[in-house]
Structures are given as structure tokens and as C-alpha cells.
Image (cartoon, rainbow, N blue to C red):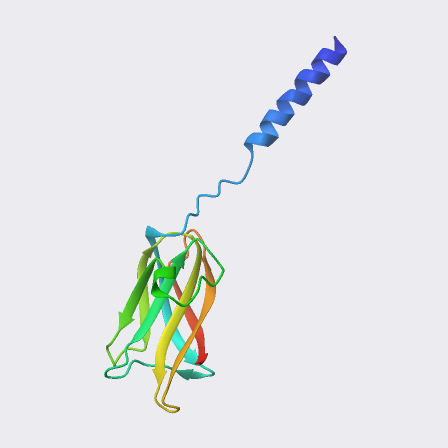
Length: 137
């Protein structure tokens, strides 16, 4: 009888512990309440859009890894051609992992600059401000 009670207790604890796993409900993508405000930085200089050279921010959902430089490697992109604004805001994001890749024009060196960073958004992050480091080709 003692062995049966021990087996039942062991089985019950196993079922209980198995059911207490973390609920990973953070599936990156659209449809959430979070936002990212991204600024392209070449070293310490803000890269603002220029007439004829808008800044572009590409985003890949559910990854921290650089997917490649082709636009088709990303899930969405956002273009900022407003020369009065140096940030690109992406709204309506769920919690999860993202990769941001930005391109712009550095007028000081007359070259295209590009680069990216991984970003993780917590469940109720709200608005995240991120600097995306870029460099010349």
C-alpha cells in the first residue's frame, strides 16, 4: 500500500511539474501594442533622410539573426523620406524577437550606409527606442 501511494504521489508530481512550463506566448509579428522608434547611427552621427535618399528600415519577425540584405529576406519595410524626422517608427508589434536592418545616405562621406541589430520586445514594452548602427559598404 505504501508503494502504491508513493507511485501515485510521484505520478501526480510529474504531471504537475510538466504542466508548469513557461507559456511562451511571444510570437513576433504585427497585431500587438508595442512600437519601435529606430534611429540610424553612423558611428555617433544620426543619419537623417535626404531628398532623393530616404532612410529605410527593414524588419524580420521571430529571429535575432541577420537574414540577408535582400528586401525579400524581410517581412516588412518602412521608408522615411521626411527630412525633418530622423526616426522611423514601427507600431503594432507583438512581443518577441526581431531583426532590424537600416539603410541610408551619409552626406558627409557621400556613401550609402547600412547595418542592423537584433531586438527583443517584452510583453508590455510599450515604445522602445533603438539606435541601429550603420556603416559604409
